[in-house]
Length: 43
Image (cartoon, rainbow, N blue to C red; front, side, top):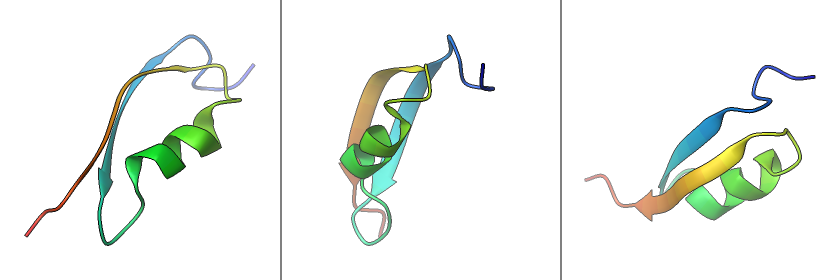
C-alpha cells in the first residue's frame, strides 16, 4: 500500500513543464483517484 492509496488527486500541469495528462498517466497505478487534471499556461 502506497502513500497515495485511496486519496483523491487534483493535477495542475504546465504547458512548458509536465502536462496534466502525463502526470495522470504516471500516477494511474498508484491507487489514487484523479478527480481533475488540466494543463495550463502560466505566464
